[in-house]
Amino acid sequence: MLRMIGRRLAAALPGVIGVIVVTFLLNRALPGDPAAYFAGPAATPRAIEEIRVKLGLDKSLPEQFGLYVRDLVRGDLGTSLTTGQPVVADLRARLPASLELTLCGLLLAIAVGVPLGIFAATRPGSWADHIARVLMTMGNSMPVFFSALLLVYVFYYLLGWAPAPLGRLDAFTPPPGSVTGSFLVDSLLMRDGTVFLAAAKQLVLPTATLGLAALAPIARITRAAMLGVLASDYVRTARAGGLAPRTVLYVYALRNALLPVVTALGIVFAFLLGVNVVVEKIYAWPGIGSYALEAVMTSDYAPVQGFVLTMAMIYVALNLLIDILYGVIDPRVRIET
Amino acid sequence: MSAPASGAGFALRQALRHGRHLLAENPLSLVAFVMMVSFLGLALLGQWIVPFDPLASDATAQLQAPSRVHWFGTDQVGRDILSRVVVATRLDLAISASAVVLSFAAGSVAGACAGFYGGWLERITSRVVDTIMAFPLFVLAMGIIVAVGTTLTNIIITIAVINFPSYARMARAEVNVRREAGYVEAARLAGNSPGRILALHVYPNCLPPLIVQASMNMGWAMLSVAGLSFIGLGVRPPTPEWGIMVSEGAAFMISGEWWAAFFPGLALMLAVLTFNLLGDALRDLVDPRRRT
Image 1 (cartoon, rainbow over the protein chains, first blue to last red):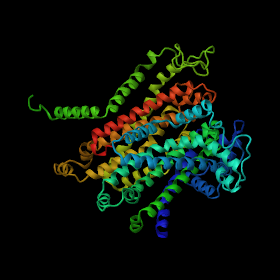
Image 2: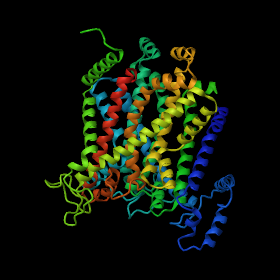
Image 3: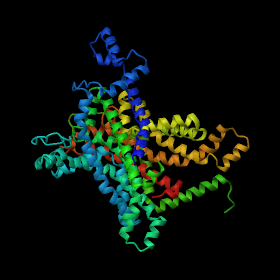
């Protein structure tokens, strides 16, 4: 098992290198002259030249890449012009908000999507199957910003069930002490029910938006995988052997059908990381996506590149986790490697 | 009826009959086809049939609810939303279609060459593909757009870049399967050069699944384009574009003026739905085994 994890780690390395090279190139492809940009509009040519030297822009591209990697290793992603803080500090402060939201959305999508897929697969051709298919097609075609706005309109403006889409907590609730950064977990740790409820209320609509977006692919893949597995010989054998339908479905079929679902989770998660940006904008969620967007508005590039790098690294880490999980679910993978 | 006149004519009739059968079995495909024709019609003729100038603001008619004059209402500066939604069709379809065509061409050729010749070509292609796939694609698109700037060409290229891997991978796999096929051997024995075999025998045979992929990809490309515009990294206002219009109308959703964001969002959703349904129908036609 440990050896397998080691191999997986090694296999993830080219991805990490690729991500670093691409973000470096994006950094250097900034519109205009970065030195002139960082020096500000009133800078003299001399000052620009000094900044060019200071940023290492007078060196050759490979040397610049070396400097870039050195800064990365030191955890230096530059400074945000808007907040005046190091980008790393900003990202660290805002990352928990994004992760809490994305994970809640993913969990919701799994909790609804997998049963829906199973349900549709076990009753092919029935009305339930048709409804599931319509839901999947609609979900695939729904722009996330559109579904988010519809949810806000219906549940905030019309029904008044949801709180205003303005961040992680309403104005009257103080944030819980920071342990993990997740308001839900922190408020539970502090045994503070009111804060927990307030944080959960704010989470409902954005989580529902993300969950709806991720629901369609998860349900679709679960359904297809279940259909394939249910038509296999070993399921027929298990049924012929007189096992209870429940046992066949959940012990024999589901575990095998989960393999493609787990693989697909990686892609769904990457999709959610992108969707997250849009959702954070609509719900004024103080995560790293809205941080990057604020930076875009003021042409502040270091935070955006830091954001892209962070997202890519999270994705690489998640793929690694999925690979390892795959080994846990499917013993064959362990033997092969 | 006389004997089949020509092979091509016979094949066409067969395909038409098969298509009719599929349409009868799945009426949704027919709906999708009609909707696609309507969207194409709007894209071509939209700017001449709209009742108002999509850019003309009217200070006396700001944020008016849908009425007999303004069917979809007016936005915050009094522009007619119906006219803007209709005129935006052309831009949204054109950007997405250009991006899909570009990534289709680049991805299929690179993937096919990689699968056919192998060696360093294959290593480079798969390295590029893996690197792009290491990013959450929408986030990568954001990073590229920020770095290169928001011009129309850049948006098209960026969307093409993030879609490149799916075509390259598929083309490579399809070519790999056919590399040692009987007809390839025959063409080789007949003295065709490898390049000629790839271009005239292998590549055309790989196209059907790739075309299905392209039509499924179209919806996703539209969502990406509109998504980028929505977060301010795409087409610039005041150009009528669905993503921008939803973005501009978003603020009024909280105060109850739903129409400013609703209609452009609905148009986008219907267009994406159309292309997704067409992709499904096309897949059923090309590869009946993969039906769901």
